[in-house]
Image (cartoon, rainbow, N blue to C red; front, side, top):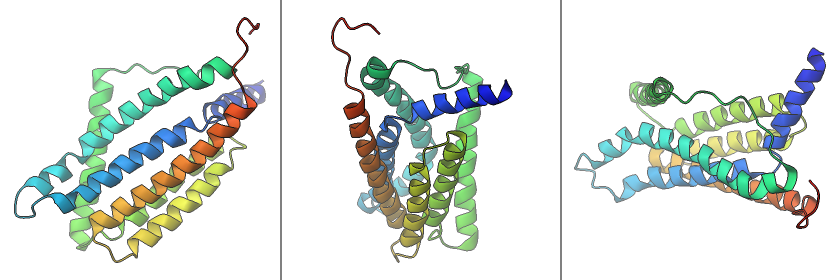
Length: 212
């Protein structure tokens, strides 16, 4: 019985990633992050503008995650569910104010920890490699929880490789991190578009009046 329940859970999780929409939307968020970090080039260094931009990173991540989730649901509502039906990925958690505050401080604390560590070692050149490794861990966890999605192994490998390349590129930290987000964001979008195209080809819209 427990084995059957886990099999159902895995099928539901696979279904969530079946259309590639998640990769496309997250890739778009990565491109926005690339623009964010590249924006330091256009700010006067003798003002507090770069510091204010750095301080807003936690807010960008919080709102980015929130709108990314909303956008994925919008696309699935108009593209996926009319073709292959609605399947709930997980029981909807209560989105309370306390939860939002906790997530905000968790993300802000993580960003602050990275900043403190970078200032302690005297350089941030390691940051693209670290973010690449962290992204690969998340992708492997997704692959483990939703079997038969081997494309996440390829994405994890690409994340590590691009992170190392950007870390050793010799570019200033903000630009190397911007380059990582731009390249990996493009990889996510390209793969997502390929997966989505296959999904649309294999699952055309039902004819009007056809029984569901």
